[in-house]
Length: 237
Image (cartoon, rainbow, N blue to C red; front, side):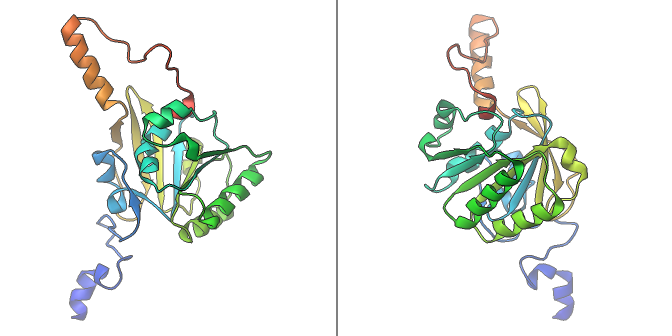
C-alpha cells in the first residue's frame, strides 16, 4: 500500500503531483475559450482564487481578448479594472458577451494605492474579477496579493511589463505575451507541474479570418478586417 502511494503521490493529497506531469488539482477554473491554451493550464482554465501574473511586451497585444471568455463566464458580480492603460470600450465588452454595466474602472494617484485597492477588492468577495495593471510590484507585495487571492473565489489578474519575467513571483501561474500577426504568442513561465517548453500560438480573430477568407474567394480581393466606425481602444484588444 505504502509503495503504491509513493508511486502515485496524488493519492496522498490532490495538491500533490509529479514534476513530470501537469497538475490537475481540483479547484475553480474559468474557460479560456482557446483549446490549445486550456490544454496547457492546470485545471484546464484560468484559476479562480489564485494570482495570475500576466507579462506583456506592450499594452494591447491581445491580453484582454485572451481573458474575454473567462470574464464572460464569471457570475453577475462587478468586474474591477484598476489602472488600465486605456479606458474600457463598452461596445467591445458588450460584443464579448460581458455586460459593460458590471465594469468598475479605478484610477489611483499612486501605485501603492492601486495595489491596496486590488487587495481590498479581492478580499471583499464583492467582485467576480479584478484586473490590475502595475509596472512595479515587490516580492512581498506579490505574496500578499496571492494570500488575498487564496481567500477569495475571484479571477485575479496582474498585468505587468515583460521585463518583470526575470523577477520572482508568488503567483502560481505566470504567462508572457508577445504579439504575432492576428494572434498572440503565450509562453507559460510558471505553472503547477512540468515546464512548458514551447510557446502557444493563440489566434485572436479565428472567425474574422474565416470570414475574410470566404469573402476574398468570392470577390477576388482582400478584405480589411476593421470596419469603419468601430474603432476600439487598446484595452479592448
